[in-house]
Image 1 (cartoon, rainbow, N blue to C red):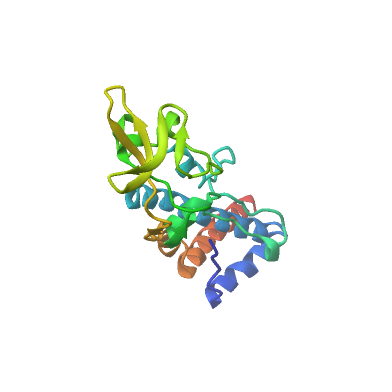
Image 2 (cartoon, rainbow, N blue to C red):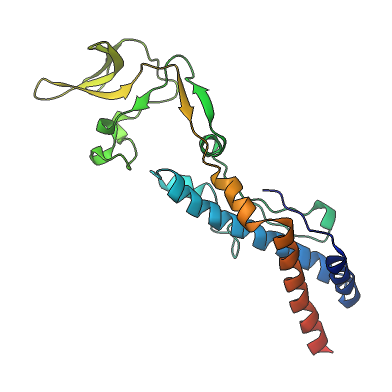
Amino acid sequence: MASAFDMNTDTRKWMVAMKLIGKDALPQSVAETLNVTADAVTKQQMKNAQSDFIIRTKFTIGSMKVKLAKPYLALNKAGGKNIQRMFSRSGTFSKYLWKQEEGGTFEGLDGPVPIATIKARTGKNERKSIAKRFRISASQPLTDGPLPNDQFIGSVNNKRGIYQRTKKGGITMLRNLDSDSVRIKGTGFHQKAVDMKASKTLVSTRFRRIAQKKLNKAVRRG
């Protein structure tokens, strides 16, 4: 997330006022403004993600915040006294979630994309993660042949996939291996949060509000 102050005349006046009440007042005000903004974007993008696509694991939301770094959840917090080097950051450290943000066509690492079916998910629930016994590693060769736990890779009724033999003698597809690529539609869950919570006008308004509080406090101290 990148945001900047709308450096209009009113904002400049507040910056001058901050310098007059102490050398630390301005950098503290700028840092707080950036952190409040990044935090607002973080909270909004989490809401967007929950409404825009299926959340199957705690990691999805957890990758967007640093919950121990209170009071702000954002990934990076502004601080120090050098305003030119200050930044706070919202987003996610998950590479997969940026695919959800931007969308695009993605190819398998070495051949087909192993797309999980509902049969592979915990409780056969579309909103749940893949059951532990049905997970495969990124290095798993997707060549025809047997796998552990009565599973195998092959074609059944002209549909290639990862299958499991059931106790009753049936066969269940766990992953579809028919396609070498998959198209993901971008949701823009992060950019929508930035547009809503981090416009230049809104950031500048936050700065003036924070600066006003510091100025009022300095006046009360006399």
